[in-house]
Length: 247
Image (cartoon, rainbow, N blue to C red):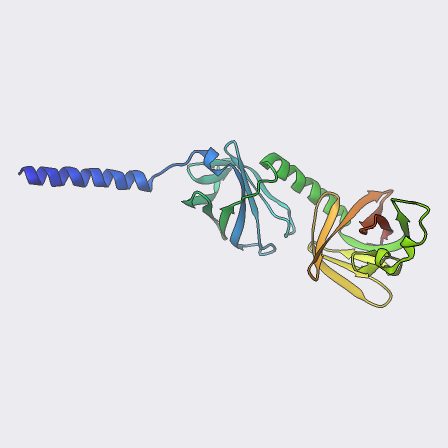
């Protein structure tokens, strides 16, 4: 009889532990910071990676590889779910302290906590919104109408600015560029002889892309409805091309 009671008590304790373990909750502060996807399946299928930011019980999704950079903001974190207003969009499963999975309708993502935390959530959202606004202006076909090559170190230096290695924007000769076409993910420089295309990502004032094993970063801005793209070589030679929008 005593043995039976002990066994029954042990079974109840074990059952309670299992229930507690299965229903473990996490304080929203557990997720704070930046998480980067290492596996992603989305209905849109226009980007291969995402960032998740958590802060003060809220979350945001961003990417720099899709048609939209800001995917969600102000998602409420509650009971391992992400809510937009009162609608649960995603479920979170904690694998360990550095890995989570996020699931929703036509969506699955596996995320790892970033070792490097460059931005708080608010900053990341602001950058994504500004980039989207600027990229809308970038999209389209642009015709080159002017270019300049100057030395920022010595404006009177006419020797260095005529060296071929300093007369280019990335890998294209500055004086040969006739047009640039900008799509959501692809950037194409046109000359009279060829077209060079690159997959790119944008920032509010920069275009970044890879050619070979080199990462190039071009500054861009708008002036009087014209697009100016700039590239600085290693000797502080500034190459600049001004474009007018064709369509």
